[in-house]
Length: 149
Length: 149
DNA sequence: TTAATCCCTATTAAGTTACTCGGGATTAGG
DNA sequence: CCTAATCCCGAGTAACTTAATAGGGATTAA
Image 1 (cartoon, rainbow over the protein chains, first blue to last red):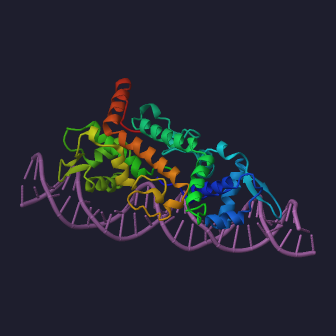
Image 2 (cartoon, each protein chain N blue to C red; image 1 turned 180 degrees about the vertical axis):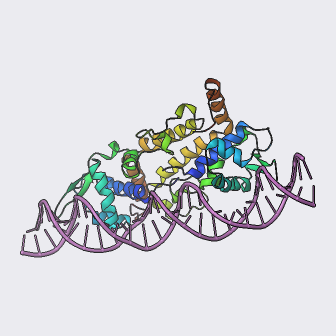
Image 3 (tube, chains in turn brown, blue, purple, yellow; image 1 turned 120 degrees about the horizontal axis):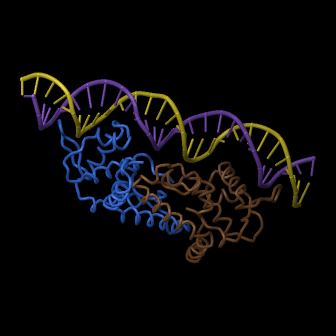
């Protein structure tokens, strides 16, 4: 029941962009350095985020990435769904595929639905702005704050 | 973010035992057949459940397994923790290991803690008795109900 | 023109998952 | 006591996933 590094790094990269929202494009190199993530690997992840419309890119020298929307309009759930696939503890309660044909006979289904809903609730109610508030608090009390783990 | 078959099969096996609570030991063969799970594989899982004190075994002919406690006293969280490890979306918020030394600098930590807590809440508030109630409802309206997906 | 940057596809080592296989120990019933 | 049913245990393994790495092409500011 762990989120993979795709989701983890994705959230951290998006948080980094959110902390610099409105300051023009930030290069992959900077984000990767600040967050301590492999640049090449992050490139793949941010590529997915771009295709999903969560970030926009500026090509060429002095180019980089920036948030497509304001931090308060970006639920973490959108980042996770883009990088990790649908939020669902089991295939049978995956809204997108909904492969379980026996749902009307399965007593454990209610459990997985409840779990899925509670996970989606947290991830969709928390936005990048929420994380930024937390980031500001940390910045305020610690000079060496680095935006990352 | 999926639960593996270990957790899935474990919950289904425990649910099966709960539906037959107080009827003496049930053999692995019966459970595996009823739930459509490989007998040898389930043996490994139920071995862990036994070591964790969730089921008791009776050896020899006519032996089998039974719940160590009444269904209403068995939170699903206990089954999941036994078979999947600690409930935590990320290592850094795993209560048992708590490996993240930078927790006072990490802005995303709050998010993972919230997610962990909401998952634990659902899994610990739902018990085998909850699933049995659901099972009885299904049984009532469908003769071919089989206790499984 | 050059260096910085985004963009894309392929490959790969290590780890995890979901089993299978084979055999030993225990016990109810005949 | 014998036998079949059952629990118990550890080793092996094929397929899949993860977390990268590698190498190069396209675009653009200076």
